[in-house]
Length: 308
Image (cartoon, rainbow, N blue to C red; front, side, top):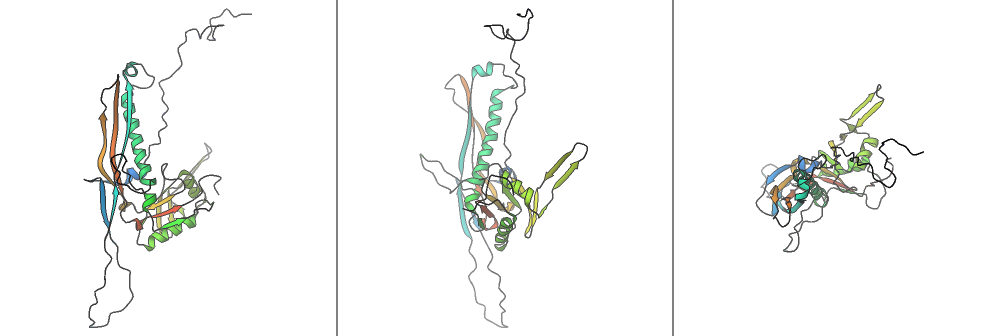
């Protein structure tokens, strides 16, 4: 029997009785915009697209005695070495039509302002990935972009390689990397890793400290968060980074690292070539890693599967 009621179900062959959509003003943002290396490193202004600095070291220690009254023999001392990295340009743009601006959009008061915010957050993500991940630096040319070298390529001396070996990050890998760095005179204090390696450290490492472990009997919840690792050669802050190459671990001496800012993040207005509001944010920066012997790298670790 056909219903005589006025209900919300569509009539046969008709629509939904003109009921408005149930779209709320809630916008569920999922912005992975935490950039620990970029955020924690000191920023320095530079005046050239090629950033240069010097690295120095001490002569090896000696246990030889000097006889009384001996003539002084002048030995060669280690010379400062010169290093450089090109700046890299990145930009993120937007193009919002006038009709969009005139529309009543759920949850958004100002569409252009929102696009600016998203562009700036994405630009920061870009630089985090560049400084953790990228390869060799290059000068570029008229039709080719300049590129900056990241930590993954810059660290060449203190390397623990697991290439070709299907194994998760292990405590012994970190200990070996720290020993290599310590032998060179480094004093690393931060370990950057992927989310999978962070789980591996939290679940399996024994020399962990500075962690919270809370059991709430009433709510039957447990909180466990390992944020430090205390090994034989010092204590490391364990920092997960979404933009590090997943199979890499970077162990750094943070005071050696600087972000070279040639052009800071700035907003620009695009030319009015259509009935829309155009614009972009742009920056030009590079990475200064100081003396790469003060850092260490673990490469080739397993990045998926059950943590064990």
